[in-house]
Image 1 (spheres, rainbow, N blue to C red):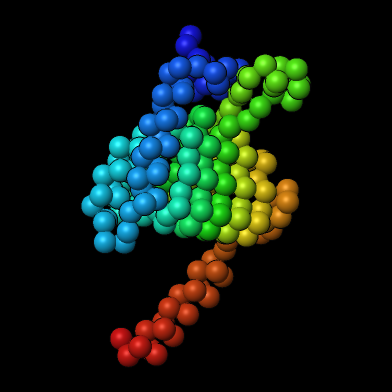
Image 2: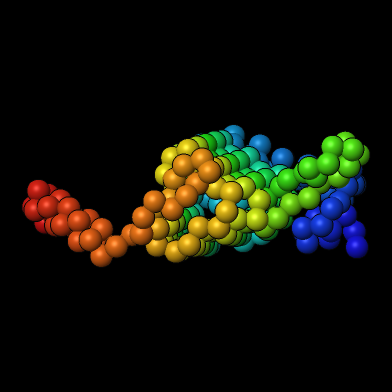
Length: 204
């Protein structure tokens, strides 16, 4: 297997590899171009992201500045919003579902290093894929670590450090991140009432 194949399969690999270096350089160039665009250049922004990412659904928006390692290992669903200063280390595949809101300064890490220092110091890396479901809201300054899967309809509180999988339909927060409670029918009623109040106040 090549170093790139080893990397994508979550195996120990050397980052001192010509193919990986070229992939990284290409990503850095595209990221630099994207971060230099303005609000009036929406077509150019979409073109850059479509070239950078492995997949990008419709109606996605990323607020610059943005950073990633390779880009091609990032897969976005529909209607994903990513706020300022997001960092995605996509050594392995990072899959983000549809209708996902990502707050400012969120870090998603599919990259890691050997615990044993002598091996680490030889220039070896290892990663694990990260998967985020649909209808997820990730608060500001959340850190998502390698190998984590986040379910559907999840809210992650600001500053959470996610080290383990999070199930569907919950609010989770803390360091390390833990489930606080389920999202229930009562939550639906509360927010539907607030929406109805909004419509009344707006005369709609």
